[in-house]
Image 1 (cartoon, one colour):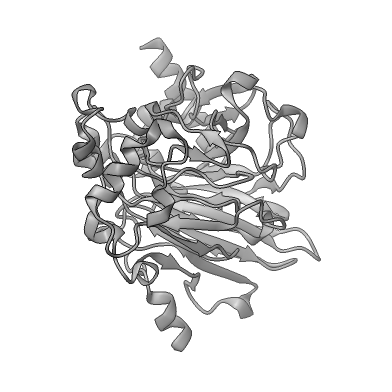
Image 2: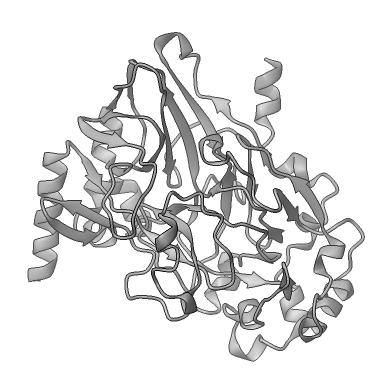
Length: 415
């Protein structure tokens, strides 16, 4: 009770001082099976701050109340920390203590947690072809499924890495037996799963929506990734860039009795969706302006949007405030925000995009905007006379009315 009361009190004090906004510390996550692309702005001396056995730091998570399910992880790995008045406590604790005020009564009543998070992931080369389980599949191991969305911010993609292409799905005509054979060949080297997939060139300023059970091998652009608050996966590729992928990564979120059942593993895949002959048309995203506001000194765009099983599970917007301009933005729900360019104030809180960050260093580029502040309206001010102030903010489910659907960018461009 004492700890809960303390966090509740600190959260209330921080919200009052920040006018409904909490400042968050950088949240770094390593992956043992990947090579960092070095565009997260983390100082190169600190890429292996968790130890070389943990792998390099290639992800930064935003406004996360979700644990990273890494082997040998630290106790709070993946959790974002609120920093206020010399105190540190997790955003998860803050939401547990002041949920309706922070995320809104509707979201709190439905989930009793902040059910989404976002990240930058940044890799030198491609990630193994993999999928994330559906809710039904993940429940078999006591977890939740994970849909996700991608956006490739231009500000962080001056270099494109070694393979700026992503394999998605399976080519039409691929059979379950084809993929089963690949899984049988796991220990013989490259198992050939990419022979049955198609690569798409990645372009900064665009994105993709990726439902559960969809195979994908993300390429080497730095990616902003709003997603459901889960960290489940199943890797289907045994070798990538000459590096072995442990079979444990295929079955880590599969019931123990099914881990050698190749038919069960093959059926993790949504076959109609993966073999869709018009895959790009059903998953590719381009920004859509929220309104015609350029003459007022700012542009707000949807960058991640669309429905998963008929429901928007998350969404994201990119706000650009032109030099020496300001605006007030009202949103229907709470959001996590990261600054990708420029400096200024958000709701009276100073924000600044750093050029380099040491591991453990505090920054002024990340905040969490509470439900109370978002619905009242938040003031964005650009203090530069030359640079735009650019931010990315993501939302949970059932927040906005009229979220665009995949393909709406084509209609908007024609209009």
